[in-house]
Image (cartoon, rainbow, N blue to C red; front, side):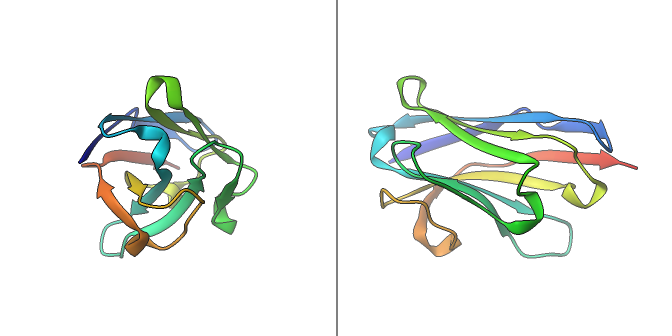
Length: 124
């Protein structure tokens, strides 16, 4: 079992930045690829970014490439999402998730542990 707790969300103006953190506890963190997903009101949960167990491989949805950066610190059992140049359409609840595999993954069904989410609101 892995417990995930997100933090760092909040209200920011368009063009601003936020850094989300996800702290993991339980089983060996480095055994899992990690991902960030988001869900806007009335929409399904969507993939944002993913990182391999070692941090050596990452993948992003096209809409955040060049603006968001996913990273991890296995010594601190944490994964991060640095979000720059934020836009109103980035407004959503952001979730971190842990996958049972080692490589980066986009599909939500590949993730077996989920956090409770943190709200990000970008005002225009």
